[in-house]
Structure formats: structure tokens, C-alpha cells
Image 1 (cartoon, rainbow, N blue to C red):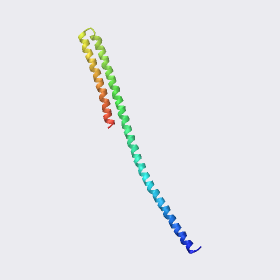
Image 2 (image 1 turned 90 degrees about the vertical axis):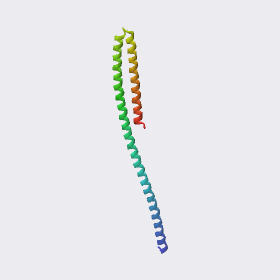
Image 3 (image 1 turned 120 degrees about the vertical axis):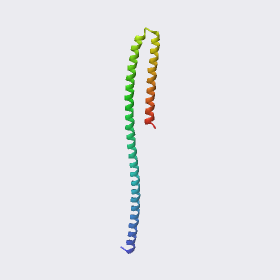
Image 4 (image 1 turned 45 degrees about the horizontal axis):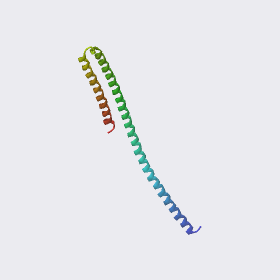
Length: 125
């Protein structure tokens, strides 16, 4: 093998090493970028999981509050039915009971609307 063949072999080997090194360097940069993106996505997933857990707890609290309110309104309606049966003998008392029934229904509607708005304001900012 002649001197030119050896020089040509060395130059070829150096060029191949440079190209391979550049390619590995490029892959290394892409790998760093991909790892950064993966970390950002993992953080976003954790944030969404936490928000989902908070929303689930808030919804559960809302359902419990609604159930308690329904029980209370049913009790109020029962009390009104008792009063109505007692007052059925007197027209003035009947009007008073009608107004009390409307007051109970008004309170129920207002409380339902208030709980719904509070849930929306708290969880959908």
C-alpha cells in the first residue's frame, strides 16, 4: 500500500468520524429536546390529575349539599302539609299556608341556584 493510499484512508477515516460525530451530536440535541418535552408533558399531566381530583371532590361536596337540602325541603313540605290539614277549616289560614309554601319553594330554588353558581365560580375560573 502506497503513501497516497494511506493518506487517502486517513482522510476518509477522519471525514467519516466527523460525519458520524456530527450525526451523534445532532441525535444528542434531539434527545435533550425530547426529554425536555417529556418533562413538560408529565408536569401538565400531573396538574390535570390534581385539577380532576379537586373537581371530583367539589362535585361530591355539591351532591352531598344538594341531598341535605332536598331532605330539608321535604321535611318543610311535610310540615306544611300538616299545617294545611289543620288550617283547611279556616280560609285565612289557607292563604297563609299557601304563602308559606311559596316561600319554601322560593328558598329551595334560590339555594339550588346559589350552589350551582358557587360550584361554577369555584371550579371553572
